[in-house]
Image (tube, rainbow, N blue to C red; front, side, top):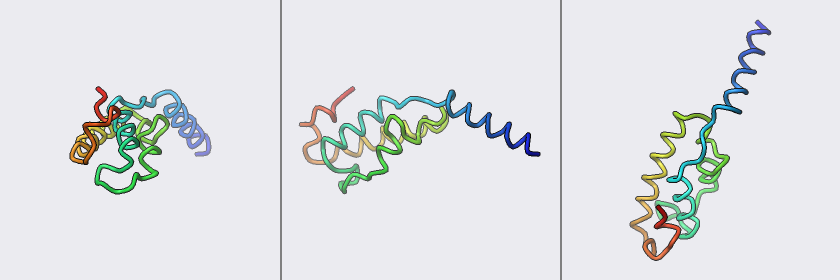
Length: 96
């Protein structure tokens, strides 16, 4: 039982170290735009968890499956930022 637990822990650690995804362009653009605007997608203050979640070392990049969902969320959040005043004047918000 101990051996199985140790082996499982080793495999999980290896998967996290080797199998993680990289931050997507959509999430880079979302965070840059949010920071430049100084507000979150809902018009409130920027959540400190945004960078911890969507940033380059965020929790989104532990696997390809999780990364895919985060990428979709970043695209939606960036689209939501478009409704805020000043969006079109901010270069960081118009990155491709």
